[in-house]
Length: 405
Image (cartoon, rainbow, N blue to C red):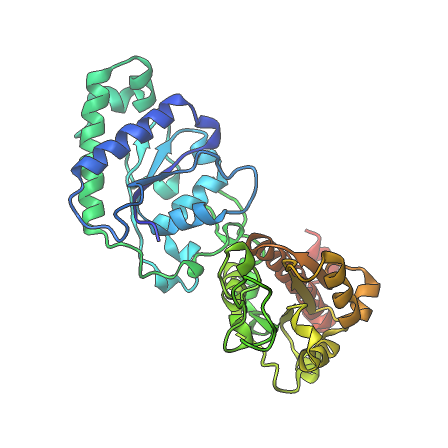
């Protein structure tokens, strides 16, 4: 895992050559000054996302790891920065982990050392975190660091840089590495309320999931063989383990994460409790009577075996709280079309329905599986929530004239 001493946070529309130069200069200065230990001494001392996250609402794996494994946040204060909810979410992950981690107690607040990039007023949530402590050049407080660089005020710029780098190294030295912290506890970006801009609504999934006990759980069914039950294709490692949750569906691509870990991470990102439904019990009844979202993840090669083929019969049904996902990477001894036919034979009812919300197939990578899981969990949760609201007594609903005010 990486061990970054600082994470540079900025508004994507502020990105220019001076931002890149500042990150480069600061990284070099911090690397020279830092004398402590890092869990990965070969990783860069800092992280800088050159792409930005504002084009979508998803942290990719690299950015998510960087937010989690960085010791200090260095935000570039500008008017645009405080207008961007994505920046507010990154800020929250460091400063107010109660908003970003589940359970909240898994992470302590980390230090924020802001840079006054351009003169700007501070919003209420961050007013207590000043960008100048009196030790920086006077021109910095008046004009901001970007203006010093544009005016080629080299003396003032380097005075600030060295002083700021010393503060980072002092704090980073006193901050333990996050190597022992569980990355899966960091919520999905869409579920983190931003610290700014002000008056933004809390994501709709964050409150009802936590308050409705019967909806807080996401249950998973893994239908996959165990090690030695399915012959490995020539020259490939066995993707199966001692039990079905240890199946590694994308091992042929060099992605060795077991399916239970991918599912668990997806549930936690959606602020849901992960639970696993055993396949050696009354599976059909358990699926039919469950009050929570259920996702069956099925290995198409395993269903060629009779004992796993019987389990797919229990899953071949249309239920509002249930979905089936089928990942595959076509091996040397089978084509995509042959695997597709195996799925049709195993799930004739769902295949005939042609509804990707009930049966999603051909998932070809860990990244795609994460996206499909997030989408499925969101859809299943919304459906269950609507059903629960519809079951409430009419008397508990507000009168129309009140509801419409």
